[in-house]
Image 1 (cartoon, rainbow, N blue to C red):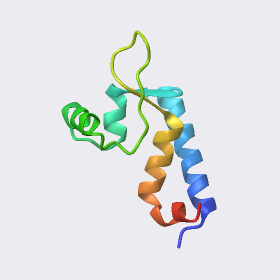
Image 2: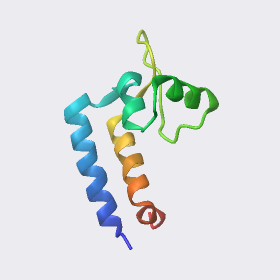
Image 3: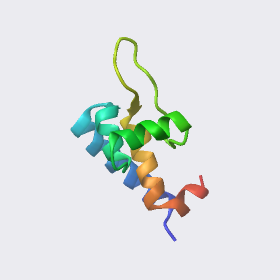
Length: 88
């Protein structure tokens, strides 16, 4: 059974990698890939349906939606270690 420390370590490492690659925020162009969607259209459809498990937001005077690298890292870690999150 994964421990909460495993989850925290994994999410921290993922956050560092994502931040290095994309910066603090991921835009739609990169977000759909990191969340595992097959295409930008699939991502848009999930956005319209409200089925994204990652908080996304609009930025004034910018196109598309954005998510924090930290939120994406936590989501990926939850997919990998779902049992660890239940203890938090």
